[in-house]
Image (cartoon, rainbow, N blue to C red; front, top):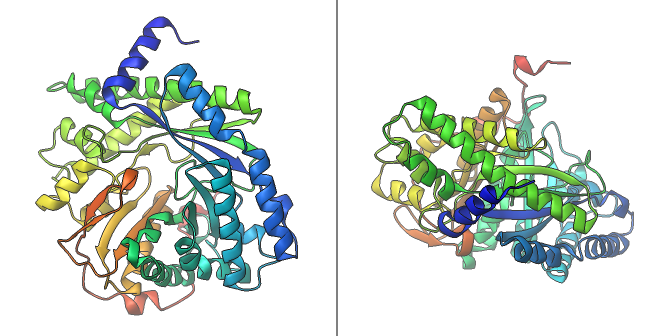
Length: 454
């Protein structure tokens, strides 16, 4: 139970330090919607989502009102659609109809996003997987709330370089299909290595096949709370700093636990996990970069940045694990460029570049996230970036991801506006040397030696 001191402390974090529950995400299994008839699949998907999730948004609003805790997004994740539509979808165009059905269902129940337009191809691709992947550009161009992800590698299986090469082309095609909207479709597409199947955060959320028929996952965020807390530790040693971050992460996770338990009870859906991720927004004071600078960096990107981020990520997880038995998902610190004002400023000043961001992904909770690059970047270069990030995930046994946006018609130094939580970003330079011969080899990069654990 929360005592009065904790209630007052929580109110202060919400009112003054931008604490929020970033999302309640309902995961829904669509495995029972499989059918050989495409129309039947679409009908079953629409009916199941609109039935199971019909109370998600109203209950989220009730919890906001009853506990005075802001819940920014209400979302749905579903079983990877490559599995669900495999029997009925013979072409990429067939899969696009399912994307449109997901979009209609999301709008009907009132959620902000629906994730799971996904394929898991870390070792190989079925015909259905390839058809879904090839449908992604059109699917994201003709829908508003659908998010897509593809898992191209894992520590256990290695990296599927055929899928990596294909995804480089798909990212460019998605950028082209949505160029009238500053290539916004790419902001709804994530390429993973070691994707978790209980992730509530978009665009990479999908409902894992090992999950229950429906579950409730909650994602909590509070960069502003952490920054305010460690301001009191200026000049103190690392032990004091780490204890401060841990205690703060504990308090933030307690808020998520309360919301998750209430949502689970009111919706009569089992509770899955709390994802404690310091996910920034463009709002002033809600920045992971500013936390790193408060730790002691003149500007994020300076020497010491990766060490500071490693410390932050580890202490956030330690504090979260003490507050809830079911911390999962991506828990840690996100470092998206466009969604974090401190990151944007660091890029604009020349303190932060793509290579330093890649180094930081070795210790952060995800990877290269919401990075705008020139629209004339080649597909093979994008594939090379995906391969590099996948290798970091594979070797370090962690989740890594790429959400990169080649903005058609824009070049280095220009700025692209995405709006809302997606913010804005300066277009960053990309290494101009080619990796075409490497990417086009085909086949699979083998799993590392430490993958053999049975």
